[in-house]
Image (cartoon, rainbow, N blue to C red; front, side, top):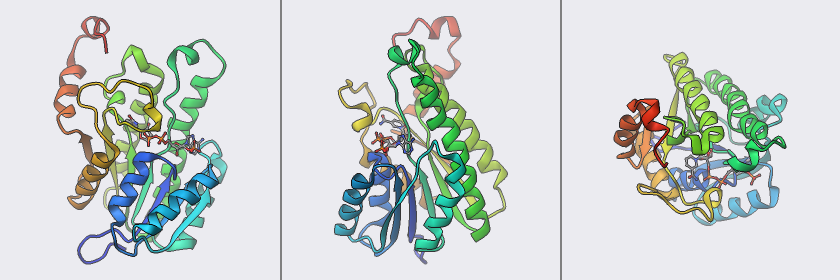
Length: 253
Ligand SMILES: NC(=O)c1ccc[n+]([C@@H]2O[C@H](COP(=O)([O-])OP(=O)(O)OC[C@H]3O[C@@H](n4cnc5c(N)ncnc54)[C@H](OP(=O)(O)O)[C@@H]3O)[C@@H](O)[C@H]2O)c1
């Protein structure tokens, strides 16, 4: 349960080695002795991230196994996190794959893997989180969407469509949870310099994991349902969204 000042007391990070997810966890936990559960596949990576959180003042920090593709195990992941730290104030859905579109278009299963992780895995674990948070009567699911899903571009339509699907799902889930005490915050970052985008040239309006974390923290404190990072992208994408397709497909973006 959040404290009297609205500070988060417990976080489950799904995608426990995600740079954006960890930046948000750091920001939310601050120097308070709040609890965090890092859930992911890379156990040594999770342990290292857990130590950094402890060094920065987190209270109880636990690591558990989570694979987005193991949908049958998702309810168990939520139950395990709850067993370890009690009620979960915030569940952050931060796992994902960017893929390589040229390679994935050529075959070999990369596109299906990306769709399974980014969309199917997210739908499955968001529903498990919603069931868990409904049972405790409060909490927020933070979903890492992307501007890439607002208008899907030919240059990254495999990734972009997975985020478009996830974003629409998260909006519907948030609406369905109205009145339950549980909320959904959709975070739509632009390009963020992390290991996911390593080696890529940052486009205009690119941002950092820390800025995404700050915007997420502020959005949570104000009870918002959506946040763009940086905020200016909202207006850029509103124009892009309404461009006629023959014009949009000719843009080099
Ligand atoms: N970076 C950007 O420009 C950007 C922009 C907008 C939105 N986003 C979104 O923000 C989220 C976090 O991205 P990031 O930049 O922090 O990327 P990141 O540092 O590369 O983290 C990606 C995370 O996804 C996890 N993951 C991949 N496949 C998984 C699976 N099958 N099961 C469980 N976890 C899995 C990775 O775990 P392993 O360590 O086990 O591989 C890693 O923790 C993603 O959803 C991404 O799409 C990123």
